[in-house]
Length: 377
Image (cartoon, rainbow, N blue to C red; front, side, top):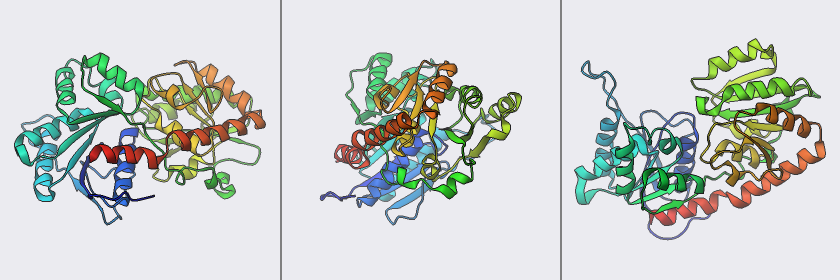
């Protein structure tokens, strides 16, 4: 990757550490900035799951949340604000980039109020449920609207999310759309490997996969139900990558349907590209996706995707070109589409080529990271 000339910045990145698209994007963006020579400080209550702090320009700062008998729940937003104040004073940050409005943008605003003229610029990136689920809750609506309007810059990962934010919060603030991106070599068809694939599927079996944080919005049961139908028609195995509150219910459903031996729950993984590249097909039946990063990563591996037609997914997946879109909840549609693709090698391979082409041409790391870098400067 090229390194643009000019001032090297000190950047603070605040994100959720758990499995999920916002944490992935924040981590990959910060690492890309570090490779360009900027000094990047990650801040969270635990090490982000894809963060490897081996680069000399990367430092991780853990937020200590002390438990007091007075509090039923530890006051994380306040502890985070205190850590940000400390970091900004010590490192003299130029930019504080917070991913997810609640609570990160709130903590950043409090930090700025404390520091006054010494505070860095604040960029808030909206990722989806911070707007569509948490932010519109009556308990958080006004404060979410306030921190959006108070940020020095606001970005959203899709046109859909930007418009949804403007409409839901009746704000006139400029929201820049900067999409998610994918690393062209970490997610690539070149990672296909016969030995790795053999760990998960026997000869003559198709390999289907899903990747998410297993929250209710991901409709994990639809993955299991769709696979239950398709494996009746095509010999196949299912790989479930990730973890979350719906993990055990997914295991139970697979057992109830009698397909446990064909479903492999892999848990959270850091090098997911190596597994995604072995797939023949990827399923994402979410209730809502502001973008659909997991689908993009599968596409970059040359894997066709079958997703729900919701949120920002149609901005990522071209229906019947790089993937297939079904209505939310219609897992039978996903199963029928999957069977048709798995039985048609020529069509599946052509769709995989188109998926790879779209991922690296429309969502390349180099261009998207440059958009953020120009915004920082």
